[in-house]
Length: 446
Figure 1 (tube, rainbow, N blue to C red):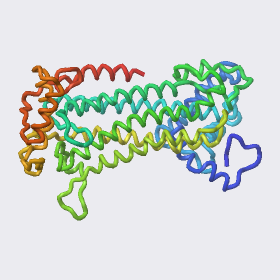
Figure 2: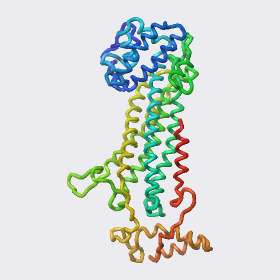
Figure 3: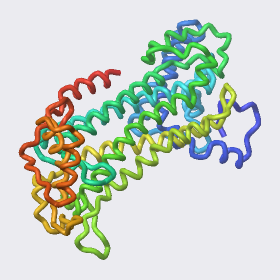
Figure 4: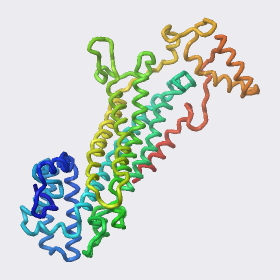
């Protein structure tokens, strides 16, 4: 097997399989970034006299050819090659001979994989940022579009107080702002250049680390070489925490949608081709997309803990188990992209029930109270409104609370929801979507 560390002996087939396993496949996602890192590194080597201008020209041309193959999908890590770093150097050596062997001066596989992963994660975070912004936009649009449609609010899964679709859609839009702050923080953790830290202790070559930082577009360096190696695992965990924050928002929204689609609620509806059926019940319209999304988001939420457990109790410096971080995080990144896409796709086709409170006349939505008198289940949404109305008219709040409670118990409570007035910031009649949009714009500036 071709490795960068080969000193004349080879690992057995069992050792190779156990230590490399699926890493060749995962490393294909890093191919572009390994080439970009090598381009920057070789330009720097030329600037300090370790490569001639002619050698740099040859290496750059060959790396550009490899990059073109990668972008066209004509690249993979060969079965007998250990990883992406070995593959790129092998290809260069095949094409350039001895010149290709010079590119590893001044770096180790340790800082090479660090820079590859950080460049990859940086692009992944930027992609998630755009996907979150796209979802945010449609949630705000739906919030404005349906802001006058009343919706029951619940606490403890019991009918509680009046809400509306503007508040519901807008809530998840603003929740994404918090998630964007997490993405921004992760981006700043990732956006530091480790190249030049070598195996974790620097080296005796007069490397120009600021040059590679500028060439690769990093905001700053991991200055301390040991700290650069300590960032392995910390960077992945920061990203896992950020996408976990997004996943938590999607998870709760998916749960709401599953509940609201239930005929017992009937608050929202999706076209038949976006739902699934039952093998024996012809009437079923199942919310499988939202159920799968809820489950996948739970999987994403577990990733940060998996990374924490993998990296805990390790002394400083590189350890081969860090390789397993890719197998944990990379699939989770695929999942968050899929979930964000599907959430937006489904919302593009959502239908809102404009007459939810009118359904109070439906016998299926009624029950007998303690006095065996029939009472609409949504009447009780407005008990607080009536308590507050009486308090505003001078009745002590506790007296108002007690008298309304008696009316509820006796089945005499009614309220005309046309009298509903919520005017404070962030209430159902003052959604502040423009302010939330400004928050998102600031949060997404990274």
